[in-house]
Length: 223
Image (tube, rainbow, N blue to C red):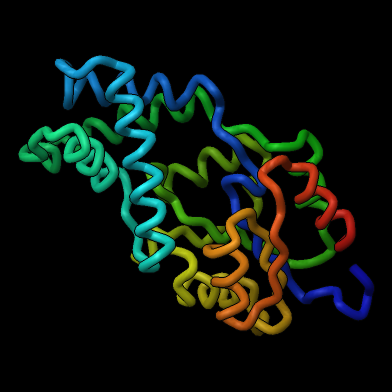
């Protein structure tokens, strides 16, 4: 990236761009939820239903630009298992508290060991712009701090009520940066949510692979 094309600020996706899950987290979370809402379902069947429901909900979020969070994803899993969803809403506070404890015990990891330092060293203002899924912004801020990104402000879909590629996500990122969209580079691993969404909002966008190394290469060009 040449100096002539260097942006005035950077927006970074989180999952698949900066962070990946601790391998122990999702199995433990799924066991917790199965025991609470579907104790008669075999563990492997519940895990498969939750993975598929999560993918399907992500597709809806990207297609329609809407946020579907913790409760909606549990309900989608139960519906995939042909189980009733009555009563789930009333149990969400206890289930969320248990998930938070697990997430803090098994926090996500930088996809590359050098990413936290590379983000911190950028000579440009930075914002994190993320669809949240099962982990809302209030929890993500705690997890980002544990992963080394705690100093970076964030825009989270559950707090806006919309999800990338909805333009409001990118507008909010530009507002935090106090920089026009045309001067902001968005970096992410999803061609629809990150690249098409950012470009439609007037930003420049770079697509990276979910390996950490390609994100690090982009950041090194900006330093």
